[in-house]
Length: 159
Image 1 (tube, rainbow, N blue to C red):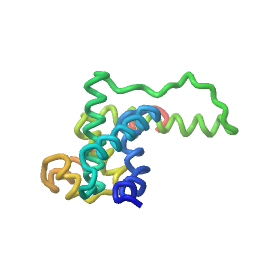
Image 2: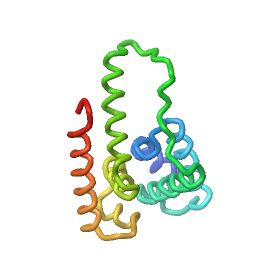
Image 3: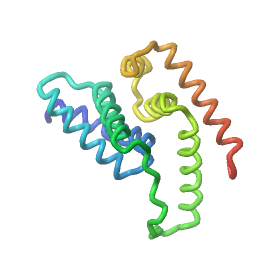
């Protein structure tokens, strides 16, 4: 297997989870994931590819998307529910919506860092490098973002 494919396949799920948290839309997350893979292949073919590099590229593609659209896309709630247990799915969807709303209450930087920590399983050292800051700064920002999110979820309805 190609070294790129090896690293990409190992991290694809984590990248998608990160992008889903950031975009709040599965189709958009898939598009950005595909664009990230394309950019990585175009610019780093034959070079060492690390999970941190993949997340950096995905983050940059996401930022390009945000600049192009000038807003995050909302989840499409008009889709008919065809799953077997609509009540359970409604509860899960409500919780998911509240967490996403809580993430939106964070600053873009807090949302980015917290999503990366939750999705990537990258060590804080690599996340700090991606963010261009220190490990201790990342730890403080993650801690504060988690507290803000927890407080939001505690006061939001149906928490």
